[in-house]
Image 1 (tube, helix red, strand yellow):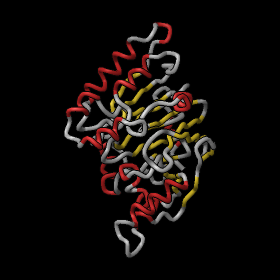
Image 2 (cartoon, rainbow, N blue to C red):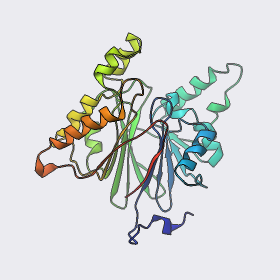
Image 3 (tube, rainbow, N blue to C red):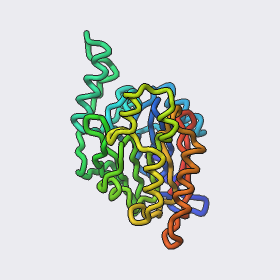
Length: 290
C-alpha cells in the first residue's frame, strides 16, 4: 500500500491523481498515473534500464508496485518494454485482443525459431473500446482513435470526480474523440508535426503521406483548430500537455507558439486558464498533482 500522506498537498488537500510523463515521442512513450491506492503505467515504450533512469530523473525510486500496464496500440514505441516491465512488476497488461495479437506477431518475427521474450506476457486482460472497466479506484474508458494500427485506443481516467484524458497517435479528431476529451482536468494531446517542416523534411514521401493521412498523426494546425474552438474544447483543463512531438518535423517552440495563439483567440467567457506544457522524448515531465 502506498503512503496516503504522499497524496496530500502542501495545505493537506487530498490529491486525486499524480501524473508523470516518462517519455513521449517516436522513440518511446510511457506515462505513470497514480492515486493513493492504484498505480497504472500507460504504454511501455522504454526498456527496464531506461525506465529506471527516468524515475531517477524525476527524483524518485521506481514504484514498488504497478497494478497494470495499459497499452494504446502495438507500435514498438508504445510496447517494446511491455513484457519486460509486466514481469518486473508481476502485473497484468490491459490491451485489446487485436493489439495483443499484433504484438506477439511483431516480436515473434524477430526470432522465428521461438516466441521472443519480448512477447511473453504472463497475464493479459482484454479490453474493448467503449467498454468501461475499473482497476482499483480508477474508472477507465478506452475509446477508438484513427491510427494505422490494429485496434488503437485513447484513454479517459476518472477518480474522485477528477478526469485525466490521454490521446496520441491519431490522424484526425473525430467527434467521438472530442467527446471523450471534454471535462478533462488533465489533457495529454498529440501535437506531432509542423506541416511545413514535414513537407520539406528528410522523410521519404511515402512516410510523409502516412504521417499526414487520416490514420497518421496530428499536426500543430489541427491541434490549434481544436484548442481555439470553444464549442469542442471546453478549456477547463488545469494542465494541457502537448505530446508525441516529432524530433524531425516539429520543435517545442513551434508547437507551443501555435497552441498559445489558438488558446489566446478563445472568447473571454471560455478562456483557457490552465497551464500549457510540452512533453519530451528525452526528459520526463512532472509529477503533476490534481
